[in-house]
Image (cartoon, rainbow, N blue to C red):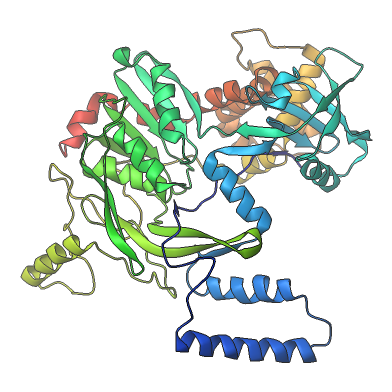
Length: 524
């Protein structure tokens, strides 16, 4: 069992707390709220006095009562305990407390894949390929996998003594590290895809994302750029103001980016701001089913204003606002407080049966247009009129959940055999053993046929069947994945992810759209 340890981005669309929803001295509750609270108190008292075992109040009230109540509303409401609330605050700031390393972890083995510049690991001289063999005197090779994960988690926020073996050496060297605040970049991949075409992937939207996007593009010499390939795949969202700021880098000042509306919050319009940097190169935006929330805000704004070709697969469809409020004892509440709407007035929220989000909503202006269209067409008044939403230049855009790409490009789905081989870590294990016996890679490097055959023999030596029908069709992707793991272990995760991105067929097809961007945006 193997894993890359990362801090996952918070998949919520964060707004400042809505005034009146929470304060240190809340107002007296209305009579109906007080009556319901009295019913809950009576029920809890009966359980506490009569249940067969003593009741843990925190578990019963917060894990049971509060979480159960929130889950009955919609899937996005959540109670955040102290650790979850602290992690959410760190992620909103784009930082974390730790040592700044991304690790490859397997049973009895930890390898460093990357160290963040300026982090404790970086300052200590640790680098990709270094192997951590002990933590505070505990030998890694004597631990079960879960014991190893628990040790890493418990060591994250305390000073540690690491035993580390550098590549090509046999004797470990001790390093004493103290945790520190480490910046977590949200633009996690950026490079020149080809001469004049910039590629960048945004992993989430935090306070400094627009600055990171501008810095990444500036490193690629904007005057020479002829196109920007913006990858929002697997971006679960973040701070919506950040998404609006990124949109402002590409849209004309003062055009609408989104609007928001909720029962306890005033309707508000967000417009593109005048930014120190502005980029007007042709754009292709790549999305998939895991593109959600604030990432959909950005993609929708670029689509509605005919600024970019949206390519890939339909997005997730999360168009609600989470207001995150601080509660006593350093806990928090993420509550659905409203919905957001695209410049054309459509909601991205997909209908969720059995919740308060059963039906898609429209902005007030869009609802008026939709009602007029339905009256003239005789359509069902319970649903928005087909073709009621258009981009600035008149291209129709649909609603019903998520964003429909202008050009659909299917993503890769592994066959069952390849999925098994990848998930069980056989590719990474082979890369480890290859480097142990052959040393560092000579550049430029590719996977020759004899290495692929050697990998096949290693699978069979581990008792893994290699069916001919899968082997013949999977050799191309296996070459890429073996190369990625080798590059990860020798040169670090950034280089490995660039290799993986360049080998991805969906990205290749999206990049091939640039000669047709103007034609696609005209609706042809």
